[in-house]
Image (cartoon, rainbow, N blue to C red; front, side, top):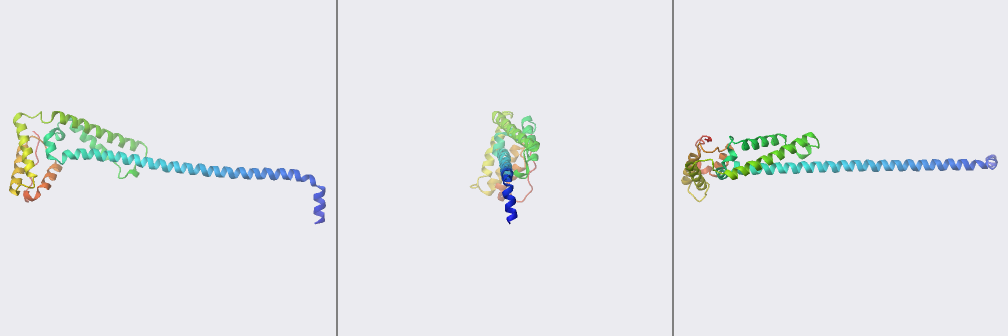
Length: 228
């Protein structure tokens, strides 16, 4: 022990370089700790930003799918309501370019629709779906405006009278206060009045017959109408 003390007493000047070395080591250790902490903070920020971006992306796709659904519901209002189809026959007339355009746009949007919002991320696929939904909505808007503008003006006077008669008959067919016989007779007469004038899609006929099914019996469905 004495020899160590004598050595230190003789080498007292070593205290200064050793202190400087210790200070540098302490400083380096502290800086390394600060860098590790900074990296952890940056990694946390990156992960948080990624989560927020994912949430925003999913929310954006959900909003897009909601717009798609709303546009489909607007179309179904025509497809499932015979009265609206009689009032606006252009909406099912596949000879009309505007009708063909929105039906084609609908097929494209439906084909690009993801099973869930989380299945579609930012990129070409999402942009294609966004454009398809927009095209569908715009095409339906244009077709609706034209259908409301022309209504039944492309039909002759007698044809418009037949459409009006069919409209009244269908109101009777759907009227629960009428007797079964009256509803069945009205439905059959309405189909005859519409035959050759406008197309009733299968979904439209099915929806109508579901409302008055008890009065229709179990006989075969009348043949599909053809637009004349």
